[in-house]
Image 1 (cartoon, each protein chain N blue to C red):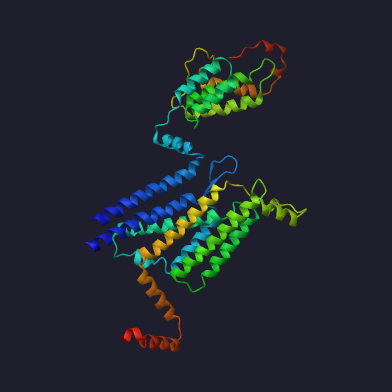
Image 2 (cartoon, helix red, strand yellow):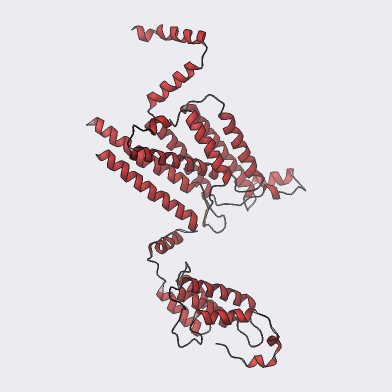
Length: 249
Length: 166
């Protein structure tokens, strides 16, 4: 009975909850609220966010968050394969929209943020990652971008002229702020972006633990780490494991 | 078996949700009201507010053209009703018409509205049976508005002050 419930719950998470969560991120990631009109503004993902999402997907595969061979295979039923591929598509678009929500819409800051995202994701491709570290790294990356865009830049773009605008005005006296200019949005945009990013990270955490199963993640991480050691180091590790007092009890 | 139903149902539900998201980004509604209006159009259940339409018509007959247009725009916020768009175009014509000259800006807006009316009308040509009007088809109105926007030697003809508004 509990086995049946486990299968049902797993199916519910894999085929309903996770795609719904990621699609909600895709919906809200491009949503802004106009500062003066208080109306919705839907911003489709710019091309650069698709590139960032592709790099993120590669990172998810490298970090063991997405394991294609376990999710898509000839031994699985066709419907399961299609549903799994569909979930990867939703993750891709959720990633693109998560980047969209923290990227400034135009101007110099748009390109600066894009460049730093690309730089970070490209560097991460060559780092040693596991699912947990990857999630922590992504949470910090999006958190930082959120603070920069929705707290600092929002203040700079504010029509009333926030403290940052006054400081920038004093520092760059005589220099045009045209290249730094951007659209002003209502404060609710920040709340929407916060909710979107929280949902995205929560979805990835749920995906890591529900989809792959925590014990497998830990085992794979350990084995991957072990395989990167030299022969002498491997021997030391094996001896240390065999000498573990817990095992001897 | 239940897991299979969850898989198929979940897949179908999320596909529908994704289609809704694509539709939202394609139509770009600005308010929740616009979301419902767009949904009504997509479902084919969109209807104009008849009460507002009648109120606008009575304003139009009293030559309160701007007020009439405001009411018609509220009656047909999605600009999907050919008849309403025809009347909006007609109000631009009547307000912009003058014995000596035509208001080019109003006539341009009139052409835009009549083009919308023509595009929306399923029957061709669009005909409005209103005894108060002297032009009953969108094609006639369009020609009249476009002629008003053209410049020609007849513009300097002093006899043109004798022409009548339709």
